Image (cartoon, rainbow, N blue to C red):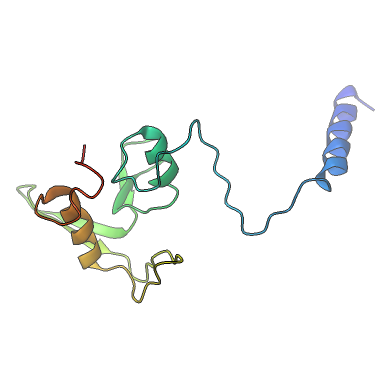
Length: 138
């Protein structure tokens, strides 16, 4: 038997022997981060740690970057049209997108355009009651 095969067998044997000792936690979400996030609302926090911990793992965006590129790909928007002058973008939303259920919120409907307008308005309209809920937007 080659030395390589012996090493592979030892590694596999060690993995099988310790596999039974790992604790099993059903329905557990584990996220490893370089630091503690400030919170899980990317609109209220500006650190990259918080953004990395929440924006990509908990929330969807209208569009996102294809991994490793700067190419935009659909996320909540299944497609979009841009006017010739570049001033108007019409997003066509995916159907059947559900909100998270929490102890204090049970959704009664799927995502729609009103939700997108709310999200954008709270960030851009200083008269929105949610504009300064966590301080000024960066």
